[in-house]
Length: 469
Image (tube, rainbow, N blue to C red):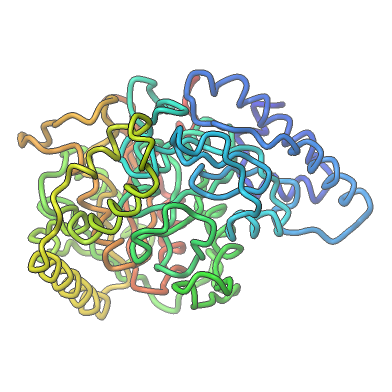
């Protein structure tokens, strides 16, 4: 029964708990047992919430008494170790923060709890959440549950690996250039970055550069991500970027009065090469959407091919990030891992380069304003290649040698512009690793992304959703 419980969607668990077919204690214990069984292989969970069973007992009593409960009542969830959790370790992937316990929950953590969710654990992150591989000096390296020799990506790699391996049905990650969607793609789960500001970042560290950071839900189904999004969205009175509310009527099953218009591109589409297996997966997803009644056509967006989103991101964030990290690490230089050391070694951005980068972002935004006059969504790769073996090494993609940071080329443009973007699995590599596709929509059109993702999920060719551990 434990295995069945840990394979269920969060929304399914909530329904069974509400109907008294499962108890919150049974559900939480099943996930704690799963953590004990598989986490030693994966190292995704880095701290347990000691009160999880006690909270589950109170949730069970509430169900028995007939008390009105929330939509996630009794359902366990996890959170990336960049998000504050009251009474539970938040160590940010660094020995500098070893033993740190926050006084209050991050807004998004508090909102899942208010909906009845039960925090059971924190998940691994790279040092300060700044790498495309989840590894650090404090809690070590996280492995991809589909193949332990491969990375789950970063910086929400611990969260994605935990969900993929059945240690959690629902989680909270964060994303500055790829950090939520990339790990979701590498491990075969769903990750959703809403419009910048939709979900408050209060209680997340680092806060710089705030204009690019997003926090978002991760799960094994679009339905669960949609449910979590609607529970999480809206201003909290503390985050100055979080000012736009969301209608709770924007459900994932909402019907459109006309077919969705979807443009797709794969290669050549972004700055640099894309693996042929990824191209084939995006094309298959486009064909599936066409079969589902969408108006689908291949598009060409020269600005994406010409814009080095990764390079622009680094130029815009480098000085403020380095300054913040230098303050934090002063006197602790021996405890700094190579991820942050690389930031310290990056040259300052000149004022001319900074202005040019800002103007490039403006052009990118303008191009999408024009694009979304014609289309409702863009379907494209999440990452230019499937998960790679551990180690930030150069690799060959479609005959061209690229940096490991090329992995961010298809995600960083949508952090620079702040648009919604959803990552979901739609294929499998020859090595048995998940391949994801990305659905991008215009600002504040989250419901469109979720509706299209739901159509795609229904026609997915992927049947093996659970890694064999």
